Structure formats: structure tokens, C-alpha cells
Image (tube, rainbow, N blue to C red):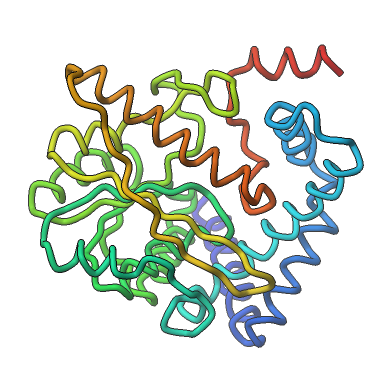
Length: 297
């Protein structure tokens, strides 16, 4: 296994070196071509198509097909762009930031907040933007099975200043420790979490990670959504949205559920605004939702 891992790491190094040798737009366009050429050939294409039928049941088929190709364009670009996120952040001129004053206010207040976002456009830009804005933040990530490749991924993120990283599993504990120290946390909360809370997402129950709302309640922190949009090619807009206001008069568990529900509502609204930016190739809902979608044709 170690030999296989090392071969994979060499192949990864070669791919990253090739992409970084190309102009940014050329590499991003190459990723788009790869995504649109090979994405529709795999099982994930069926998942994405079914997800779109679940979320937009009344969407005409020709519009759904157009959207699927736009999704693969974004997915291909995003994975190619991982090689050079350090060249895409706000400091590069390729990412404009709307609501930067909110990030500066959070930085200057010195009080931690819970940043939430989803797998939108190039989601790596969330942390790149927080680093650029001077907001110390900690995030958890899903490590790859190959430890050599995982080390390289961490090193790649360090190129644009992301050093507070914890693998999922121990990430929750590390994030809470950071909150206690006054460091903000940043979380992508849009993937299926089997041990999570069932709250609506596009009108269907979706197991959702409650960690963001739980930390906000426990530490009295604001929930601050961030949203990345792809403007075209390798250019982006980061939107620092209005904070999510938690309701009053609820006990702790009800407040966590309410917060999780509000986060999903905000994310859904963002996806509806520009659906081709989202990572539709992930099975977001429980199996019974997919069975019903299949039986409906």
C-alpha cells in the first residue's frame, strides 16, 4: 500500500506542477473541458441529475441538461484551480469582496464568529479570503486516504495562508478549543451528515450537521454566512452576507435546531439564485428521497 501511495503522490505532484505551469485561465479552462467531457460519463452524473430533479421538480428537461453541463464546467474548473488558489484570492484581483467592512469589523472586534458556507463555485476561496482580510480562522477538512497526498494538500493550502486545519473526526474538538481562545471557525455545512439534525433543504428532510449552530449557541457567537460566486472563468465574487439572527425564547436544543434550519434556508436561497455554482454531485438527501425520485421517473 505504501508503494501505491507513493506512486499516487508522484502523479499528484506531476499534475499540480503541470497546472501551476499554465496561465491561470488556461488551466481553469482545461479543467472545465475535463469536467464537461468526462463528468457525464460517470455515476456522479446520475446523482447530479437526480438531485436537480429533487430540488427543481418543475424544471424543463432541456434546462436541466444545460444546468448539468454548467455544473460539470464548475466542478472541473474548481478541481483544476485547487493547484493555484494562492493566485485567485482577493489580493490577486480575481476575487472581489462584497461586504468587506463586515470582515474588518469582525477582525477588529476580536470576538470569534462562526463562518458558514457551502461547496459553492471555488469554495477554497472562503478561507483564502478570511486570511487576506486578517480574520484568524480555524477549519476542519476531510483528509484523503493517502497520507502523502494529504500532506501535499495541506501544504497547498498553506501557500495561501491556511494553517489552522484539523481533520474531520477530531475537528469538532479542535474547533471548540479555537473558539475558547477567541479564534473564529469556518465550516462548509452543505453535505449529508447522518448523525445530524433533520431539517428541510429544498423542501425535503436533510440530515444536517448542527455543529455550526451548536458552537454559536455555546459561545454566544454570531453566525456569519459567506457566499462565493463564479463570475466567469477564474474570476469570483465573495459575498459577506447579513449575519443569521437566532430567535429568542428557546431552550438550547431548540435554538440549535432553529439555527441549523436557518443556515439551510440561507444556503438554499443562495443555490436557487445561481444553481450552477453548487456541488450537485453529492447525495445530499436520505435514501428514501432518492427512491421516491426514482419511482416518479
